[in-house]
Image (tube, rainbow over all chains, first blue to last red; front, side):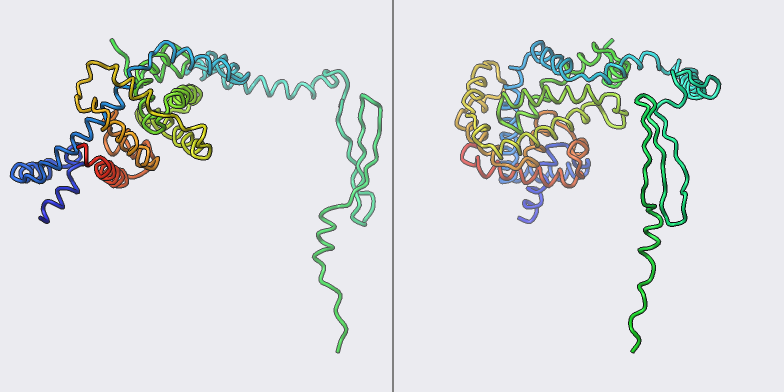
Length: 180
Length: 184
């Protein structure tokens, strides 16, 4: 009886081929001489067949062509510009080309970044849209920044509290209380 | 010579759409079955199956080949199906579709080798019994039934251990057997 309980626990694994050869052989030998376990095996196999039949039959109704067209449609609809760019760049950066292409790209970026030092004003106006900052002009934790916007020829003087100064103030110990 | 899944994935990663088409052709029915097993609603299952391949296409470049393609695609499918099932449970009226259509279509499959499946009463009860399982239990039953996947592969797909797969499978089968005892 104890054997039958154990067999019942392992029956599924046995039929699924998930037991070791020794365990499988032990179950096979028991089932061969136990009517109750043979019945359990038959029921489990029938359940498996019913499940397979129910699921397999339905899958045959799915034709490939319409399914593939629907997937393609999703791909086409949901593509973003950066995916197109990635696809395009994938052709450029195949394994054989990547060896020289990546250093070349880095060199190009560095060259563009250093153009300003060799040709000041090449972008159409020196320091266009750049901000000029002035250091603190007093000793009370106040800073002044001078902001120049070249397009509109506007200058803004910006006074602001020095955050660090505030923090230092906040951390100062409280004044001593009255002495008793 | 037929290319392996891995070779097709590599071709996909270099942008070959025809390679992806071949992968879809190989797996669309099985992926659909897995999802249908979880959702029991043909329209939703078709929708989720198409979304599965769309997601796979989007992520194909991140597929490193650490697992097989089929475990990867089933993992996407199962996750999407479980999400869809949870959404359906929140909107039961949208989800409720009778299984009559599914059962009728099975009757049309004249050369079904499994004569027992033609027992409409058994199928109706089987459907109800499957629907009563939790998504996690349904998932193991469906993956095992459809693809005959090993417990290890099922565990990889569902993100759980082989021991968990084994106990879920044992529980799910027991539950189905209890509910279908009159027909087995």
